[in-house]
Length: 216
Image 1: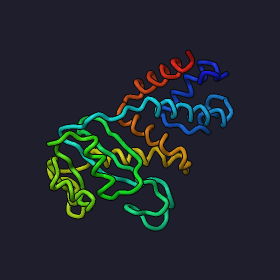
Image 2: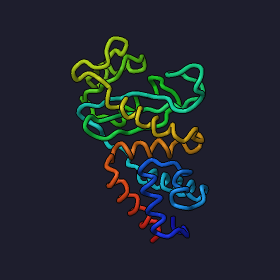
Image 3: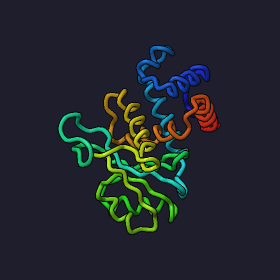
Image 4: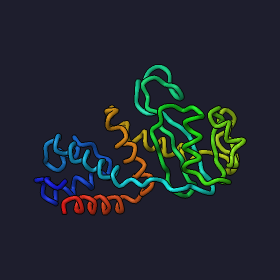
């Protein structure tokens, strides 16, 4: 950002269209800049978001946890264990923020330490019936499961919040027609930031401030 030759007006427009979810190609046409320029600027915005992403403190109260899979082939096996996909683990404090982390696999020995690292003891942890969550039954947490083959919600017993985040993130990423694996972590934190700070006016204000701070 520091060496950008773009006028502040064009930078502001780039930020506004980034927040609006426009692709770099569309943004370049609207503003009158080269597509590569718009792509690079958007990449730098994602780097700014990643560098300012907050390490989740202890989540307490009611916490929904779930894993999901991004990218890879459209055909063939989907869901858990799908070939070529990136596994991501998410924790959502109800009426609060979501925290995501890329994981090597969805095994119990991967997920349980992350939950223990991020969730306060005695919290209520909501999951589906995936076997990797079995250890939560005899843990320091109160564990509630929802069986999706039977129903999606039973009063307060559901993981609709974290599943809403997955849907929102995948819908946003789909418009890019494939994301390089090397940059996936940037797009993931962008989606996390968009979810946690959902007011577009706030998003624009924050990005403009970060860009200005980077120029000083």
